[in-house]
Length: 112
Image (cartoon, rainbow, N blue to C red):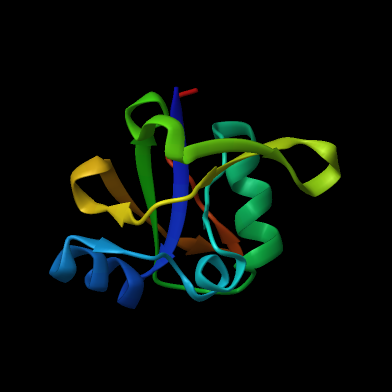
């Protein structure tokens, strides 16, 4: 199963340069890296990144993250994937831009 992470361009550049990061500022504050499923990613973008340009969408294989990935209740009682370890570049399967069109982020087709 693929899970998804939205990063701002400087955070993505930091991950590429260092090979791993603790995540975005919200991840660091919360103590884990926030991810979304394919069904949750668009709502995450709308809620937490409204109007933000220059975003990247990263895809990772949930199983490859091992025991550090926990599924926890969050928004609306849904289970969200949370990583209790650094976000590692080697775990990223792909990254794609999330362009803005008419004030909305345009997502690629997401695998479940």
